[in-house]
Image 1 (cartoon, one colour):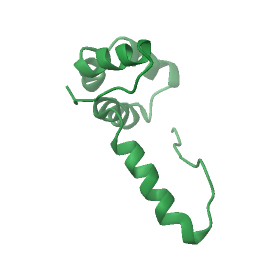
Image 2 (cartoon, helix red, strand yellow; image 1 turned 45 degrees about the horizontal axis):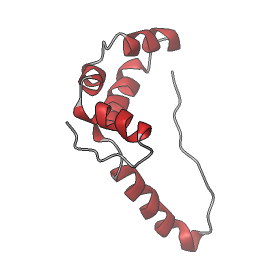
Image 3 (tube, rainbow, N blue to C red; image 1 turned 135 degrees about the vertical axis):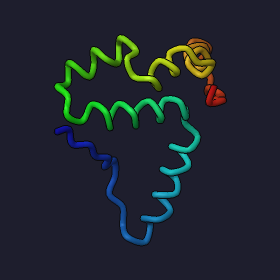
Length: 92
């Protein structure tokens, strides 16, 4: 079984909600198709060996991963990286 966690900082209690809102805004501004693919892979690969999951990802054997690889957002991400600018995600 894989264990997943996210701890990137420790803050005083009075700053917790402000920091949580900042993190939520950052996540919300990210690429929606990537998040969908991550959620699917985590759910389906939970009981797989790591290499088996990686093989399925690279062969686009997860529906959302295949959608992501063929999306406008994938092209936008690569182009934005090459142009050294922030991407504009459309979820397409």
